[in-house]
Length: 265
Image (cartoon, rainbow, N blue to C red):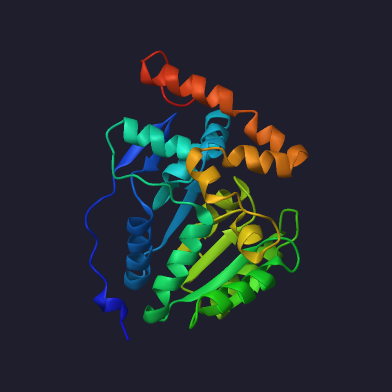
């Protein structure tokens, strides 16, 4: 059985590429998984923001979010528009780091290392359904616990109880699925406060991997049209998010030709 000490040591700093002020990590899926497992092995406390274009727009429109995304251990490109943009800027090795793929790949790679996982998020019952699906797909996976928080801000007492629940599970990785940017804010507030060294915000991966919601076909994902597939599936909920995309394109073009400074304010 592989031990944490068998992991390759860190290969240097992963470069960040600024997109409207957000430093997007120039990585692919394999590098992201390797980095995460290395953090756990060395007990380094970090969080991971799995970031599509609408999250970049959230940061542009609310600069208070910028230090949260830029303070992560990784802010990975979860969206083909960001992948294409980073490649255009010379980072040809970049590939999409899709939340559900990151979760499955990390779970598989963690089995021989004996790392433990906690699932935090989803509607009532989703985390438990996700745990059952993951255990069926990843033999030997250790799911240490699961909890679905209420759809409201937690009181200080409730927050302490959640942190204690995670600590008592002896989890190494906490998967957070409470939607963006709420999940990124939660991770920034709790990294280092919980014993688990790594927190990863994967949003809708809870619904996709539990089977609650359909994933777009791979060809749709590769074409950059997953946002349209999801919009058709949930127009009322997702329209406010995706209507920002034309503005995102315009802002990025202005930034690239030097008309605007990154970010706002």
